[in-house]
Every structure is written in C-alpha cells, then in structure tokens.
Amino acid sequence: MATEFHNLQELRHSASLANKVFIQRDYTDGTVCKFQTKFPSELDSRIERTLFEDTVKTLNNYYAEAEKIGGQSYLEGCLACLTVYLIFLCIETRYEKVLKKISRYIQEQNEKIYAPRGLLITDPLERGMRVIEISVYEDRGSSGSSSGSSTTSSSGR
Amino acid sequence: MMKNREYQQIDPQALATPTPTPPPRPLPEHKPKRARRKWEVFPGKNRFYCNGRIIVARQSGVLPLTLGLILLTSGLFFVFDCPFLVKHLTSCIPAIGGVLFVFVVISLFQTSFTDPGILPRATPEEAADIEKQIDNPTGSSSSYRPPPRTKEVIINQQVVKLKYCFTCKIFRPPRTSHCSLCDNCVERFDHHCPWVGNCVGKRNYRFFYTFVVSLSFLTAFIFGCVTTHLALSFHTYLVAANLTTNEDIKGSWSGKSGNEDVGNPYSYNSMIKNCCSVLCGPMPPSLIDRRGFVPSDDSVQTSPVEIELPAAKNDINMCTHGTKGLLETASRSPLLTSSCPQAKPQAAPAFLEPLPEVTPSPALEPAKTTAGRQSTNTPHKHHSHHRSKGKQASHHTHKTSNSSPRPHHSHSSRRKDSKNRDPKFSSLR
Image 1: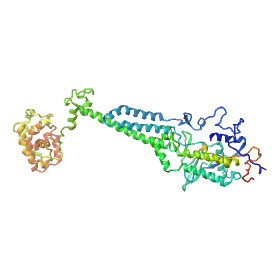
Image 2: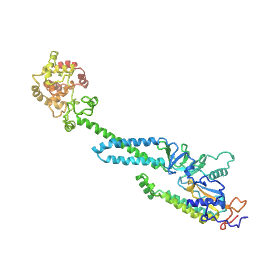
Image 3: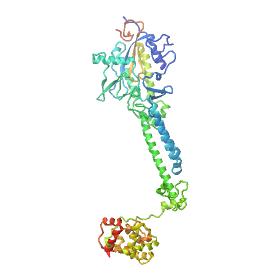
Image 4: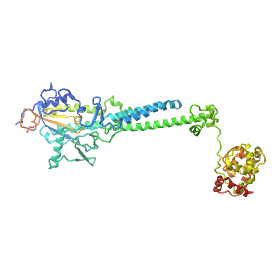
C-alpha cells in the first residue's frame, strides 16, 4: 500500500494537483473518530453527493467498529494487562486489523470511483486522523481552469 | 470549454517508474539519494532510538534515577532479604517479588518509550485550509490577524471549546493539549511525567497506571518483607541468646555479635533452652495490684527504734535498695516472730479471708499476693521479703477490711516517701 501511495502522489506528473479538500472531524459524539459528512462545495462538480456521503459514512462505521468497547476489546485488554502488554509485540490488535481494512477500502474506492473523477482520497491515518484529504487533480492539458474538468459520468460545467 | 473532454483516468496501477523530473512541490520526506524515515524529520522535541521504534522526550528527566532506585532497592531485597526469608518462611517470597519487579520494569519501559498519542502537525495545505475556513464563514475582516483561537463544538449537548494550536497549526481535538516540554500536541493529555521521562496520554496511560500500581505493590511488599526480616532476625537472636535489647545495645555481657553466650550469666548455654525459657517460661503475675484497695493510714505501725534491725534481715534474701528499703524493712520487722519460714504459715490463713474483698489474686502463695499490696511501697519483689512481712500484712488486711477504703491519693502518697508511712502505721496501733 505504501508503494502505491507513493505512486499515487506522483500522479501530479501526469495530472497536476489543483486543490485539496479537507473533510474535518465531527466531534459531536465525543472523541471517537468520526468525519463530517457535509458535502464540500469544491467537489460539487466532480462527484455525486451520494457517492461521497457513502464513502464517508462507511469510513465512519469502520472507525466506530475499531473503537467499539465490547466483548472482544475487553478480552484483548485484560489479556494484554496480564501479560504486561507484551502481547502487543506479538499479535495485531483489533484496531490495527480494522485500519488495514480501511486502507483496503480506500484503495478500492480510489480505483473505482475517485480516480476516474480526478480525485484521490488520502487515508486519514497519514494525516494524524485529523482530516480526510481529497486531492483534486486536473488534466495537465487543460489551461486556465482552476478546477478540474468533468468526467464522463458526471455532468460538466 | 472542457465540457466534453474526457478526463484522463488516473490509474493507480499504471505507473511504472518514478519520473526523473523533480516534483513541482518538494516533498521533505523524499530525497533522491536516501529515503529518510519520518522520525528523522520529526518536528517535535523528541528523541528516537532503534531507528524510530523507541520514542522519548528530549529531556529524559529523572528516568535514570527512577530506574536506578527500582533496580537498587529490588536488588538489595533479592540479595539480602530473600535468602533469609526463604529459609524461615516460604520460597514464594522471591517468586512474588520477582513477578512484581518484572511488572514494574516492563511497564516503566512501555510508559517511557511509547508514543503517548502525539498528533502530527498539520501539513501546509491543511493549515491554509483552516485559515481559509475561518476567515470566510465568520467574516473576519482583518486579514493579518491570526486565526481565532477557539472553535465551539457541541459534544453530547454540551458546548466545548476547541483551541487553536499555533505550533501545530490545528484546532486541537477535545481533551488534547500541547506539551511544551515535548513541543507536541498529545491526545487525551494527562501530564508530562519527569519520572518516566515522557508525556502520559491516550496511548500510554494504561502502561503508566500499571507501572504506578505495580510499583506500589512492590514497595509495600519489599517493606513488609524487610520489616519481617528485621523482626525475625533481631529478636530471634535475642531470644536465642537470652538477652534483652537493652543489654545488647549496651553490650553488657559481650558487646559483640560473635560471642553470644559468653559472659551472659542468665543464658542456659543452649539456644533451645534459652528460647523455651524466654517464650514458654512461667508467666509471672502482675505485682502492682491495680485493683487493690488502699489500706488505711494506721494500718502499718513501727517504732523508729527498730531501724537498725534490717541489717540482720539481709540474710533473708532481701534486696535493700537504699534508705527507702531499709525504712520499709524496719517498719515491718518488729512484727516478725522469728525467721521467715515461720511467718509464712502464720500469714497464710490470715490472708484467705480478706483476699476476695481486696484483689482477685492468681493461684500463687497468698502471702505473696497480699504482700504485693504492700509491695507498692517497696521496689523489690523477692518472696522471702514478703513472707517476712506476712504477719504484719494480716494486720493490714483486717484493719483495712474493717475500715473504709482509703482514697487513691493516699495510696500514691505512700509510695513517695516511706517516712510518711510511719505516722500512718503508728495510728493503727
């Protein structure tokens, strides 16, 4: 995954980075990791609202699952406490497993939905879980246009 | 113009080799010569070891001292206390101590070397975006003023203010605080602990708690073991040598721990016999007769003429402790018939009646008991001494039982000066 990110970052050579949109955290439920589902205006012309909201809601669900306090987390916590947390050196925690799932999901979303639209989602883990960074690319060939051109699926300007 | 132009699909898989041209915006983490790890360019005041696996604060504080104290105390305990306690108590002691010690050390290292929950600083784009967001909606007019310091959010129907961190260029999430020592924003910031040389935050709070609790248990355990060791060791030695602490400190007999029984006249020269005599020997009664009634003032009579007689009575194993003892002996001596053994049978029946009224006495010689009442006046407790006073004591008891009990202050006043007793004694006659 890391190598692909590196590759993705070099997309700017084929398509220039026009803008970055940041989806901030939603703290209404406390300190749990949750992102705002408010549709940013900069993406208005690039992607459908429903697709975007689906992505963010799915990500929120994944994070809620990772941070869920329940049977498995208690078991993991108690076992870790008994072994003076040395068990963290050996096994992967539930949170880490979910983060891997999120990473795969984002990659899949990028490939299927966002890349065709000239967008790129950066894993929030790379940004300290503060924001979902969506990079907006525009075609290198285009001139004088600040925002990217429309794709075939979405309506253009 | 660009309506119908097909956008070039960004294919994540299609990229082959990195282009040699330098990127338009230089990325600090990528260098053409050697890829640097992020810890090498970490902006906070932390230090990293093992190629980024271990993180500590810049000032390790007193972590070496903490570690040193724990190692020293535990080391001394295992070397000096454990062998003794294993021999005398149980071999579980070093096992428990060992487990606690391992818990303490591991949790200390985990607290010190774990990332407490540091929030990475905002990328330049993020910072710019935040400033843009703040300026536009709120309509802040002044352009060169820094972004507002707070943002309000509603968490569980409660308003919480999020502060803007100028160092990290982010609005801090709730419960996040910036540590000036480490120069980082830390999630769920508890405090910066100099003892562990690191911040305590969301990710290492459980390690810190485990460390504190296990250290408390270890300290209490070591303290308990050391106290037990001292108690067992020192007084066991004293019991086995039939010594008192006073004698041991003063070195009355030997003064050296090597020669335990040399010089001690009270030792039976056998550890077992010493132990038996000290711990299992006969239990002497209390001689102070706390609940006895104070005899009336004229209960004991004497004539000053017989003061010289006590010299003869020294043969009857009396301890004469100075003038007081002499006068006391003198006060009693005229009532003696002949020698002590004769006094004893005379005294015995006399005492049987008043005994229940005065003091419940142990099943020893009654002469001793009632004489004990009188012995409040005398410091010695030798049996023959009391027997010699037996007959006189019988007079005491008869008179005492007939007369009303004296108040206690007269009882105490008798102790002070034996001379005061003389008029009391004489008054009874």
